[in-house]
Image 1: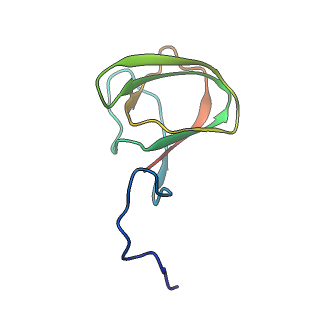
Image 2: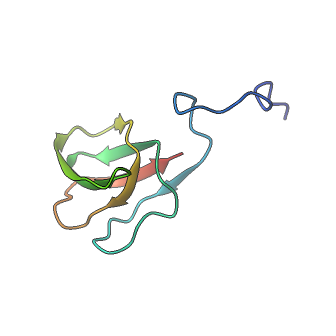
Length: 87
């Protein structure tokens, strides 16, 4: 299949080109820093941001896509589920 955008520079505001399911962990960073996280089942989302801060996003609605540069999704404090990292 031809991709007319194959030679365009990719920026942080460009659509994601890769995705993977996220398994929250208190000790292990994600394989790739995200550009966004899709939340399939709503709840709280506790993350370690790329800048090093740890923050909890409370009551994230199901079906939300949050534009976050995240190193880790923590299991303690995260009640949201069916998470997908986009980059």
